[in-house]
Length: 312
Image 1 (cartoon, rainbow, N blue to C red):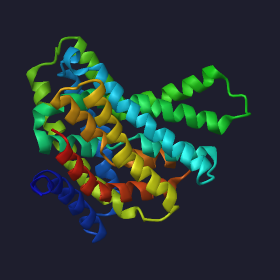
Image 2 (image 1 turned 90 degrees about the vertical axis):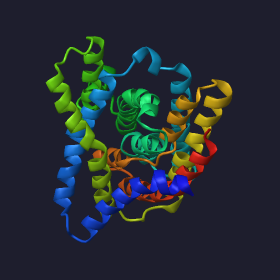
Image 3 (image 1 turned 120 degrees about the vertical axis):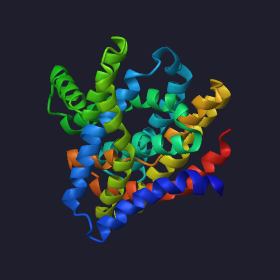
Image 4 (image 1 turned 60 degrees about the vertical axis):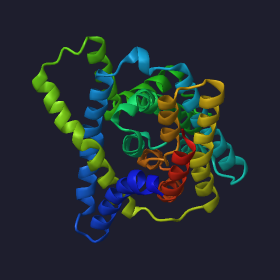
């Protein structure tokens, strides 16, 4: 019970505060959108920039950590994608968006916050290593598959498809922050202390603002759409993904305690708002993914508590 109260509850109280403020019209929806734009386009990219720029790259990138996490992620995609097609008879484009929701865990807004609350800031090295390739790789994968699904039979050339994928991925603010962090890291952190102080000020605002704003965003979602796909996404995100990561990380790759905690806790997060934004970008499965974000985020209060008890 102490894990629920001390670690999980504060994060969800901040989210609930944002939800209540928006629900009671103390904060307008345009204001929430502006808050989220600030978080996603500025504060969180700066947080990622700082983290990657100061990361010990040789120590952070453990092959077992990455293979464990991303095997679980792509297993979640496969289950949701195939389930959408063969169980629920959804079109292929819908199935790609539903699969993306099972693939893209909320590694940033909730994963960092809960891992830090549970194990301290020093335990986040594995989280940042995962996050550094999370958005670029998974967006590129999702966009490539969606463009293939949309253009089947239309003769879209491979170079044109590659350009479209690269443009959409590389213009994401999160990806820009990560790439800039890598450049500064490899250059030996040449920035003056005044710049780092400004970066620190902005980075400290990222997580609380993003979590508060996420609560406001959830007001506009409704628990509707097909129950089957929504339940499948929640199962893949909250149970299947972290279970695969735990099994591979502990018994196949023998990850140390810190790496195992980072990998499993990141995997145990519900689909983030990006799952809805991806569906919205292509105009498919929007209702299902919006419902899945809301349902899985609520259920994660209990499932994350369970994983905290299982982890060493």
